[in-house]
Length: 429
Image (cartoon, rainbow, N blue to C red; front, side, top):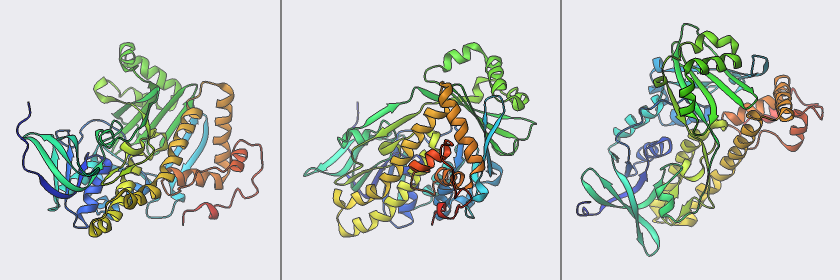
């Protein structure tokens, strides 16, 4: 039973969820002097195993906030080259992040949650932000139909917070979205990822993706001699995988990536692994009078796009640039807040579609589709223009789809590309 409701607290912005989008938004608002309360039902920052890759657009966000330079050097690794191979080891294509404009011409792989902990640490130093873990959102406060704050349940009982804007940054199954009465198409993919981190004497300096018959296996070098592994598996199959044993998993992985057979031997216990489900969220709107959705609550996407967390961070920055004027004018209506959605929706919609297309082709069990997939990779390997467009999209620097209709025909080998070596037109301005 909950205790009596505490007197109503007052703030400018109330954020539900202190994840990738919510924490970044809080920090960005604090740097503009905006009073912010952030609630998260977890007891503290995340500690679980997850693969952490900062794409160039995410690096730019953290740099702008002054966080990138605070990441401990011993907990991250700069990676330039990503190689795509057919299961068994035949190389299909290589992508070099060094082709991107400096200074963000690499990916950064960190140990689990390193970047997020750095963001949270910066947030906790801001006097205008109150970050409260162990506190759950329970409902919205309404004033003549517009959102005027929220109610919450925390260690000290129930509370109410009056806010000019409430931000739902609470993930795929967002309670804020539900309270805003925004319908959502939540699609859970039939596959997820087994993630592992191993430490090995076999130094891995570059990243590798293997694609085969309904097989995707990836390796990312982390700091020191640690390596992240990710392996696509059917949803709900983790228990049966464990029953078959680690040695069987090692055998399968060695068949996919023979050159790393010795590395796989360093996976010795299931405690080195975790399971990550995947889902997609589509909604008709992200805004209401006095309330906004960001990140997965608005537009979760398959991690194949390599941009889910990055896009939540970009959401936060765009919204943080909009809110000060809304607050100053006393106008946080849906009409004013919609500018955020107009700015962001085209990009995330493109990435959602791209991720679905990638999963279809990369994880195919159809030999004809697999032949086409491999042919596209091989075209990218010898076509700098198309390769750069794919790279810039993955890096978050390109907001349009990487291929036009004619580019698709070229990638499939149906049409020649007379401008294959011209990457100037593909480069982000």
